[in-house]
Amino acid sequence: MSYFVVGYYAMLIGASCLAAHYKKRQVFLLLFSLTLVSFVMGIVGGVEALRVVTFCAGLLALAAGTSYAFREFLIIISPPGVAKELRTAPLTASFGLFVVFTYAIAGIFAPIIAPHGEADVISTAFAPPDENLLLGADQLGRDLFSRLVFGARNTVGIALVATSLAFLMGAIAGLLAATKSGWFDQLMGRVADVIMSIPSLIFALLMLSIFGTNLVIIVIIIAIIYSPRVFRLTRAVAGNVVVMDYIEAARLRGEGIWYLIRKEILPNSTAPLIAEFGLEFCFVFLLISGLSFLGLGIQPPTADWGSMVR
Image 1 (cartoon, rainbow, N blue to C red):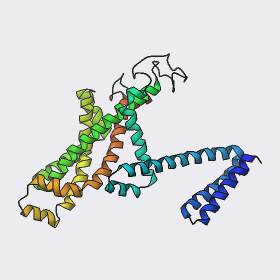
Image 2: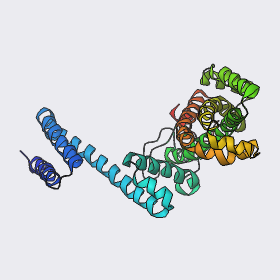
Image 3: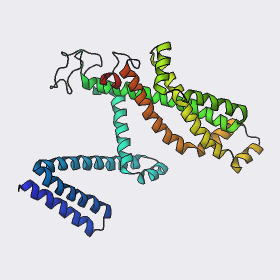
Image 4: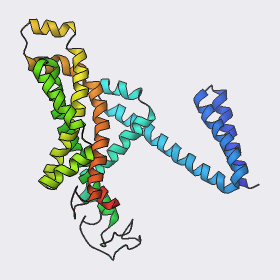
């Protein structure tokens, strides 16, 4: 038995005992569960399996520490209301925010971070990684790391613009439908049903084959595809708000539709809309990457993650 194995089990058991002594129930369960898993893995796979478990546990600990430090940083720089919400947020949410922050930094400062241009041919095809090419070269000899960084700006940026436009269209239509009701509500509902009845990828391929693969066309088509989802959610959430007594009181005061939407309905509907924005962004991101993978999305030589996978 090597010193590594003895030290590994001694550290885990000692940490588990400390957690139990100080009544840290969740920490104790985590550490002792890791001890039991390591014991089984050590019997089955030997020292190498323990090294793999140690490496994975170290990655998880690094991710947890990064998430905790980033959450504390956000709490310090945020207003009191936002800081109160961040204190109760799980570490997984903080880690997600950290990943989004990393992508944003990579996209905004891509020309500074990337050592080469996104379309610069600097080596031979499929050159291996070296001191100049961190991830090697692609089929044309372009730096993969530089294209990966520029791809964060292009893919994530276009997905963000398309999602924002889809939310603007869908949220306005949903709020108006809930407030006005009647024929407008019925009309918008049927239009949304028609668009949602067509598979999103097929609809996008059809529209792009007709109107071309210009970036503006891509953003508009994707916004049209996903705005009905936002419309239905906004209509459902706002429909529960417009029947409240304070909305009726505002109507009796003679307030207009836009006042009701801005001051009464929208502030009480933001939480589910913000959650839906994150989900829709993921779907839009995957659709853009899928279109680029099929050759109808972001066109070369512009760096894009979908075309890079292709």
